[in-house]
Amino acid sequence: MKILLRWIINAVAIAVTVMVVPGISGGEANNALNIDPVSLMAVALIFGLVNALIRPVLKLLSCPLVLLTLGLFIFIINAAMLLLTSAIAQSLGLNFYVDGFIPALFGSIIISLISIVLNLFIRDED
Image 1 (spheres, rainbow, N blue to C red):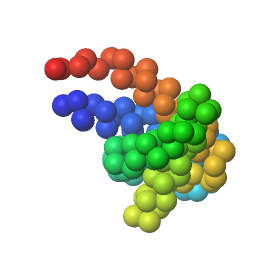
Image 2 (cartoon, rainbow, N blue to C red):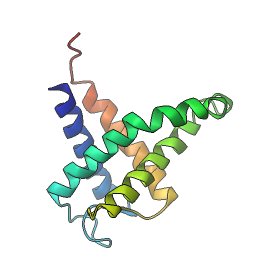
Image 3 (cartoon, one colour):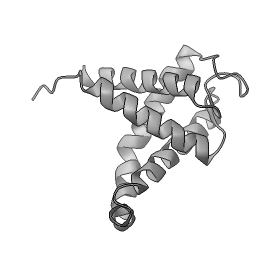
């Protein structure tokens, strides 16, 4: 159940990001408000898998940079994960586009903030 909730939270965060950040779109490349729900859920799944599988390795390898920048390098890693998600989604024929590093950076910040806020409402069932 918790995995399903996190998937939905990712989808909500990505949808808001698509609506707010210029340069990130979920429909046609030039139409940020045209969000296809099937593509959105698929992109949220890809984003979750990328963050679960690749992001920990990058965080481990970049640990010295993270320490030197007092944690700010994490934003660079998050932007890279969003760009990778976009590339994978496009290769699968899904409607999700990130037009460069700056939109990816702003998008990753917004996704992180929304995810943090929404995850506060999920109880840990240990």
